[in-house]
Length: 112
Image 1 (cartoon, rainbow, N blue to C red):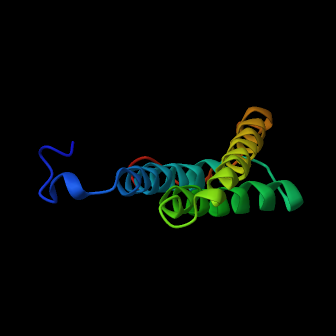
Image 2: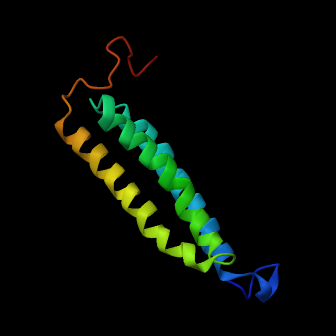
Image 3: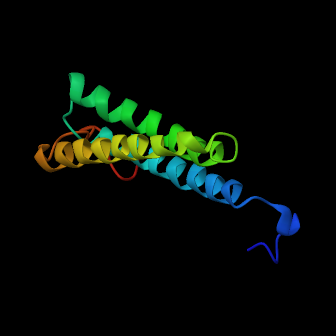
């Protein structure tokens, strides 16, 4: 990776890891935005799932980047990762227990 990078070998490894985390977790957030609409989650469960993804999506990669400035904060990556896992578990449970009609618009047809 560093051999073919225009920035050369001086690019810190944490910046590559942080960039990858931001990209992948952004894709996960978009997919989750579509998935949460297909569940019947309401109230606290829905809020926990949504905010868990929002907080985890931004703070996990930010923690990887903060490793260069404050390495002692790297331990918080476990908290943000656990928050993402909890959010994914809530959305998975909401998807499994949702009725077949959840999130569908009855008036829409594929040709619309």
